[in-house]
Length: 311
Ligand code: ACO
Image 1 (tube, protein in one colour):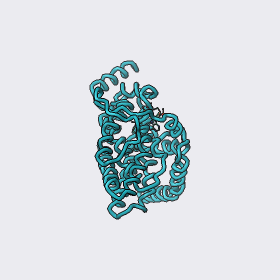
Image 2: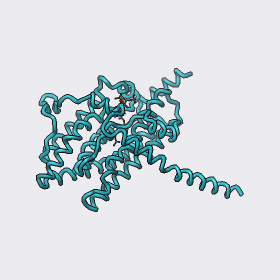
Image 3: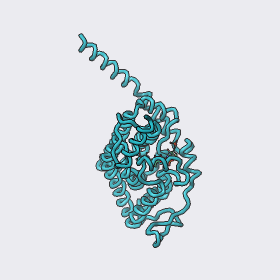
Image 4: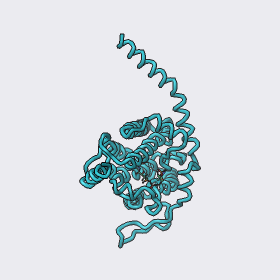
């Protein structure tokens, strides 16, 4: 019986049919989606913190409005993704608990500090740029709710990337100090942005199976190369220098060769020892605790309303 179901499931994947929450699926397929989608949701939610740090200090009203909208979009992506993950049979409370106790991972990139306004430009340009490259293939991922969520998320990410790059254009064409600030932000965010796309294919434990299930459509290294090839000309265009002495166009491959990524740093950050891991968790857990009275009040109100209806 199970064999038959598995066979039918694999045939559906081969036909590029979407798998929906109530359809039969192998337990490992379910678990791997819960893992990736919840990590993704956590990343969106924790990802609000580095930029939230600059909303009150944005240099103009226009910049403030754009940044505020972007951070709100990230909250929306997180909630959307938590809902999509819940369709697989895990509760939101369980996911929050995994995040708050440090059991769940979220993207390494959000464990770096945002020290100048130019970091808002670099994050939009590089981090959201890498996110789009990672997420466009996810629009055709095999699990229906995840694929549909990604269509909307990618549209918004595209606005995020443009607002970031536009900040960089302005700074790069500004005073020498402003240009220096933009270059400094690029220097600090470049390598973490490359790491964001995950370990090398050789080190990636999940890629092979996830590609078979069409959860992943492209490997980590493929996405990284695509990100580099897309971003280097954008840096050239605004006169900024990618901080990689080994970066070189490879005519034969039609791609850029690039330098060694510091994978020790990556794993340190993933394991909780990055520059901002503790602060990020403190902020999330604190927000959860401070919100307790709101959740209690909402529950009490809902109960009262239900009681009144009964009478
Ligand atoms: N930060 C933290 N952990 C990471 C990162 C990263 N940048 N990259 C990989 N890892 C973790 C994986 O979660 C996995 O850990 P686990 O087994 O405990 O779950 C481990 O390192 C090994 O990596 P892979 O085998 O390559 O894992 P996977 O196949 O899931 O690929 C990837 C990682 C590319 C991030 C994938 O999960 C993905 O595409 N996720 C959806 C997109 C996403 O989450 N983006 C977050 C940032 S985008 C944003 O929020 C704006």
